[in-house]
Image 1 (cartoon, rainbow, N blue to C red):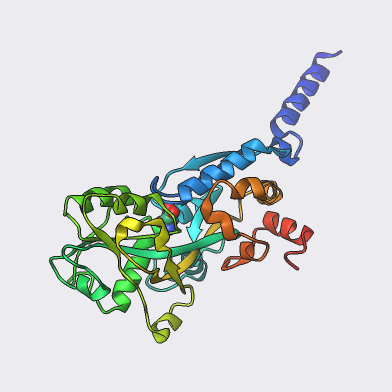
Image 2 (image 1 turned 90 degrees about the vertical axis):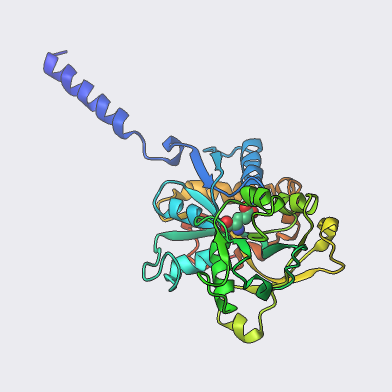
Length: 328
Ligand code: GLU
């Protein structure tokens, strides 16, 4: 073979290697999912997804990396910026980011590359407060001496806390001493009497509340019971209750009224179709295995997976929903 022919063949070979066949199997199987604090539920949800994908690998298989984060807002930013392929976020955060709602980090900047994947379970907006001093309702917080943890800036509860306090007419700068720490840190500060209350939006049961219920300082859930008019201004909240059967130590004799959102999984326009299809189909096809891992998955059904999704459904997920007759 002439030297120039060999050079040409070699060059061609290198090009083929570099470009490769363009099917999904050659794409990297590692997917990252942003979750939340170790005492919340999102982190366990991420682990349950990982376990299901590892136990029932598809072809191509997905290797999920479950990341601990501050929560919804950090996850949303990580997904839309391409740092993570998936994130678990609150449905109200999905709404606000997709619409670019005023008074949020996305005001006038709707996140148009956001895509919805599936909806999981109801999360309650939880406000936990001390019984000494006795903080029984929201207005008991309207006092400069009350230190309240609203959550870290990357969390979903930070956005709920500011919205709820503002709607109740409590001036964030004048009314209370605001603290911005993680849920884990909030438990320590609460026990040390450095804070009197903390917000944490999460589904029940969650380790965060088990820990506070079994802690040294007596705690209680504070009801959040907005009027219908107030609720109508915030289309993403629904009325719900905190099931107190999980927390006998909190001293309630009936479930506590509050408002709630849904925990949802999102991706971005850039998340590969095969990967989203693989994640959704593997979980759906092995739903019994998936559901046995967390009590909170109890109420997942065919209809609930499409509830409270604001951004357009990712094409990879839509393909699966259409195959199963769940979406037109
Ligand atoms: N809803 C919280 C957030 O978005 C996280 C709850 C959890 O970790 O279960 O930040």
